[in-house]
Image (cartoon, rainbow, N blue to C red; front, side, top):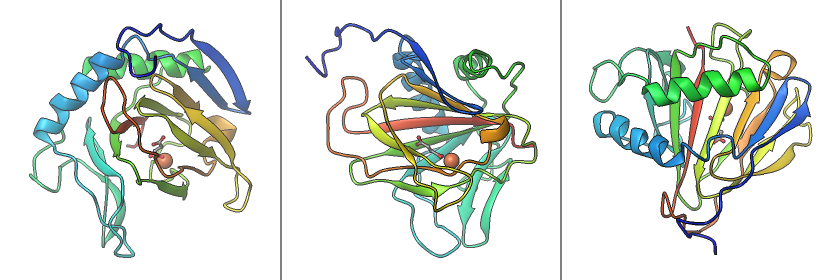
Length: 215
Ligand code: SIN
Ligand code: FE2
Protein backbone atom coordinates (compact mmCIF):
# COMPACT_ATOMS: atom_id res chain seq x y z
CA UNK A 1 0.00 0.00 0.00
CA UNK A 2 1.53 3.30 -0.97
CA UNK A 3 1.70 5.85 1.79
CA UNK A 4 1.91 3.11 4.42
CA UNK A 5 4.50 4.04 7.04
CA UNK A 6 5.27 0.36 7.51
CA UNK A 7 5.69 -0.41 3.84
CA UNK A 8 8.78 -2.47 3.09
CA UNK A 9 11.92 -0.48 2.40
CA UNK A 10 13.27 -0.64 -1.13
CA UNK A 11 16.56 -2.40 -1.73
CA UNK A 12 19.36 0.07 -2.45
CA UNK A 13 20.92 -0.25 -5.91
CA UNK A 14 23.69 1.63 -7.67
CA UNK A 15 23.17 2.57 -11.30
CA UNK A 16 25.70 4.22 -13.56
CA UNK A 17 23.78 6.76 -15.66
CA UNK A 18 26.55 8.59 -17.51
CA UNK A 19 30.29 9.14 -17.27
CA UNK A 20 30.59 10.76 -13.81
CA UNK A 21 26.92 10.34 -12.87
CA UNK A 22 25.43 7.74 -10.53
CA UNK A 23 21.91 7.02 -9.33
CA UNK A 24 21.89 5.55 -5.81
CA UNK A 25 18.36 4.28 -5.51
CA UNK A 26 16.92 4.14 -1.97
CA UNK A 27 20.35 5.03 -0.60
CA UNK A 28 18.95 7.46 2.01
CA UNK A 29 15.73 5.62 2.72
CA UNK A 30 16.75 4.53 6.22
CA UNK A 31 17.62 8.13 7.07
CA UNK A 32 14.58 9.73 5.45
CA UNK A 33 12.59 10.48 8.61
CA UNK A 34 15.63 11.91 10.40
CA UNK A 35 16.56 14.01 7.36
CA UNK A 36 13.04 15.44 7.22
CA UNK A 37 13.22 16.25 10.92
CA UNK A 38 16.53 18.04 10.32
CA UNK A 39 14.94 20.01 7.45
CA UNK A 40 12.23 21.14 9.89
CA UNK A 41 14.88 22.32 12.34
CA UNK A 42 16.87 24.22 9.71
CA UNK A 43 13.77 25.87 8.24
CA UNK A 44 12.50 26.90 11.67
CA UNK A 45 15.54 29.23 11.64
CA UNK A 46 15.79 29.98 7.92
CA UNK A 47 12.27 29.61 6.56
CA UNK A 48 11.41 28.40 3.06
CA UNK A 49 10.89 31.29 0.67
CA UNK A 50 10.18 31.62 -3.03
CA UNK A 51 13.04 33.64 -4.49
CA UNK A 52 13.03 35.99 -7.47
CA UNK A 53 15.02 35.25 -10.59
CA UNK A 54 17.18 37.99 -12.10
CA UNK A 55 14.52 38.23 -14.83
CA UNK A 56 11.87 39.03 -12.22
CA UNK A 57 10.03 35.71 -12.02
CA UNK A 58 9.10 34.12 -8.70
CA UNK A 59 10.43 30.57 -8.51
CA UNK A 60 7.77 27.88 -8.00
CA UNK A 61 10.16 25.95 -5.75
CA UNK A 62 10.57 27.30 -2.19
CA UNK A 63 14.14 27.26 -0.89
CA UNK A 64 16.31 27.50 2.18
CA UNK A 65 19.95 26.73 2.93
CA UNK A 66 22.26 25.47 5.62
CA UNK A 67 26.02 25.32 5.86
CA UNK A 68 28.61 28.05 5.46
CA UNK A 69 27.28 29.25 2.12
CA UNK A 70 23.74 29.50 0.83
CA UNK A 71 22.60 29.79 -2.78
CA UNK A 72 20.32 32.75 -3.40
CA UNK A 73 18.77 34.55 -6.33
CA UNK A 74 17.19 37.97 -6.61
CA UNK A 75 17.01 40.76 -9.18
CA UNK A 76 20.78 41.22 -8.83
CA UNK A 77 21.58 37.67 -9.91
CA UNK A 78 22.44 34.18 -8.68
CA UNK A 79 25.15 33.80 -6.06
CA UNK A 80 26.29 32.19 -2.82
CA UNK A 81 26.31 34.18 0.37
CA UNK A 82 27.11 33.59 4.04
CA UNK A 83 24.05 35.35 5.40
CA UNK A 84 20.39 34.59 4.93
CA UNK A 85 19.04 37.70 3.20
CA UNK A 86 15.82 37.43 5.26
CA UNK A 87 17.56 37.65 8.64
CA UNK A 88 21.06 38.91 7.76
CA UNK A 89 22.24 36.07 10.03
CA UNK A 90 24.52 33.18 9.02
CA UNK A 91 22.66 30.19 7.56
CA UNK A 92 21.95 27.42 10.11
CA UNK A 93 24.75 24.91 10.53
CA UNK A 94 24.68 21.85 8.35
CA UNK A 95 23.15 19.05 10.46
CA UNK A 96 25.62 16.20 11.14
CA UNK A 97 23.28 13.70 9.49
CA UNK A 98 23.35 15.78 6.28
CA UNK A 99 27.12 15.95 6.14
CA UNK A 100 27.55 12.24 6.88
CA UNK A 101 25.09 11.24 4.16
CA UNK A 102 26.65 13.57 1.58
CA UNK A 103 30.15 12.21 2.21
CA UNK A 104 28.99 8.59 2.13
CA UNK A 105 26.94 9.00 -1.02
CA UNK A 106 29.73 10.84 -2.85
CA UNK A 107 32.19 8.08 -1.91
CA UNK A 108 29.73 5.39 -3.06
CA UNK A 109 29.72 7.15 -6.44
CA UNK A 110 33.53 7.28 -6.54
CA UNK A 111 34.13 10.81 -5.24
CA UNK A 112 36.14 10.49 -2.05
CA UNK A 113 36.64 13.14 0.64
CA UNK A 114 33.71 15.26 -0.44
CA UNK A 115 33.37 18.13 2.02
CA UNK A 116 30.39 20.30 1.07
CA UNK A 117 30.14 23.82 2.44
CA UNK A 118 26.74 24.56 0.91
CA UNK A 119 23.42 22.79 1.19
CA UNK A 120 20.38 24.03 -0.71
CA UNK A 121 17.02 22.73 0.47
CA UNK A 122 14.27 22.78 -2.16
CA UNK A 123 10.59 22.26 -1.41
CA UNK A 124 8.27 21.35 -4.29
CA UNK A 125 4.51 21.34 -3.95
CA UNK A 126 2.26 20.06 -6.77
CA UNK A 127 2.71 22.28 -9.81
CA UNK A 128 6.27 23.32 -8.89
CA UNK A 129 9.08 22.62 -11.34
CA UNK A 130 12.64 23.56 -12.02
CA UNK A 131 13.69 24.31 -15.57
CA UNK A 132 16.87 22.92 -17.11
CA UNK A 133 19.98 24.60 -15.76
CA UNK A 134 23.62 23.97 -14.95
CA UNK A 135 25.05 24.34 -11.44
CA UNK A 136 27.87 26.72 -12.20
CA UNK A 137 28.00 29.29 -9.41
CA UNK A 138 30.48 27.13 -7.47
CA UNK A 139 34.16 27.96 -7.46
CA UNK A 140 35.42 24.37 -7.26
CA UNK A 141 34.21 22.31 -10.21
CA UNK A 142 36.37 19.34 -9.18
CA UNK A 143 33.81 18.50 -6.49
CA UNK A 144 30.60 16.63 -7.32
CA UNK A 145 26.97 17.49 -6.64
CA UNK A 146 25.05 15.22 -4.29
CA UNK A 147 21.29 15.48 -4.62
CA UNK A 148 18.89 13.73 -2.21
CA UNK A 149 15.16 13.30 -2.83
CA UNK A 150 12.58 12.95 -0.05
CA UNK A 151 8.81 12.63 -0.08
CA UNK A 152 6.71 12.68 -3.24
CA UNK A 153 8.30 11.21 -6.37
CA UNK A 154 9.37 13.50 -9.18
CA UNK A 155 10.69 13.20 -12.70
CA UNK A 156 14.28 14.40 -12.74
CA UNK A 157 15.56 15.55 -16.11
CA UNK A 158 19.21 14.74 -16.61
CA UNK A 159 20.41 16.46 -19.76
CA UNK A 160 23.64 16.75 -21.62
CA UNK A 161 26.38 19.32 -21.94
CA UNK A 162 24.15 21.53 -24.08
CA UNK A 163 20.72 22.92 -23.22
CA UNK A 164 19.19 21.35 -26.35
CA UNK A 165 20.38 17.79 -25.56
CA UNK A 166 17.43 15.53 -24.89
CA UNK A 167 17.36 14.78 -21.17
CA UNK A 168 17.07 11.37 -19.58
CA UNK A 169 13.86 11.17 -17.51
CA UNK A 170 14.48 9.60 -14.11
CA UNK A 171 11.68 8.97 -11.67
CA UNK A 172 13.22 9.83 -8.31
CA UNK A 173 11.59 8.41 -5.23
CA UNK A 174 12.02 9.22 -1.57
CA UNK A 175 15.50 8.19 -0.47
CA UNK A 176 17.05 8.27 -3.94
CA UNK A 177 20.39 10.07 -4.29
CA UNK A 178 21.93 11.27 -7.55
CA UNK A 179 25.61 12.17 -7.68
CA UNK A 180 27.22 13.89 -10.65
CA UNK A 181 30.71 15.26 -11.02
CA UNK A 182 33.90 15.06 -13.07
CA UNK A 183 32.93 14.89 -16.75
CA UNK A 184 29.23 15.21 -15.77
CA UNK A 185 29.66 18.17 -13.42
CA UNK A 186 28.12 20.72 -15.80
CA UNK A 187 25.33 18.58 -17.23
CA UNK A 188 22.01 20.38 -17.58
CA UNK A 189 19.32 19.13 -15.21
CA UNK A 190 15.88 20.05 -13.96
CA UNK A 191 12.67 18.71 -12.46
CA UNK A 192 9.38 18.21 -14.30
CA UNK A 193 6.16 19.63 -12.81
CA UNK A 194 5.39 17.85 -9.54
CA UNK A 195 2.16 15.83 -9.62
CA UNK A 196 -0.37 15.76 -6.79
CA UNK A 197 0.13 13.02 -4.26
CA UNK A 198 0.34 12.08 -0.62
CA UNK A 199 3.51 10.75 0.97
CA UNK A 200 3.62 9.16 4.42
CA UNK A 201 6.60 11.28 5.51
CA UNK A 202 6.01 14.62 3.81
CA UNK A 203 2.32 14.84 2.88
CA UNK A 204 1.89 16.82 -0.32
CA UNK A 205 5.48 17.81 -0.99
CA UNK A 206 8.85 16.74 -2.20
CA UNK A 207 12.10 17.92 -0.67
CA UNK A 208 15.41 17.90 -2.42
CA UNK A 209 18.64 18.58 -0.62
CA UNK A 210 21.60 19.44 -2.79
CA UNK A 211 25.15 19.45 -1.43
CA UNK A 212 27.97 21.32 -3.10
CA UNK A 213 31.42 22.65 -2.43
CA UNK A 214 30.77 26.25 -3.39
CA UNK A 215 33.61 28.24 -1.87
C1 SIN B 1 18.41 21.48 -8.24
O1 SIN B 1 18.92 21.30 -9.34
O2 SIN B 1 18.75 22.40 -7.47
C2 SIN B 1 17.29 20.61 -7.73
C3 SIN B 1 17.22 19.24 -8.30
C4 SIN B 1 16.09 18.44 -7.68
O3 SIN B 1 15.18 19.02 -7.08
O4 SIN B 1 16.10 17.20 -7.81
FE1 FE2 C 1 20.76 22.27 -9.94
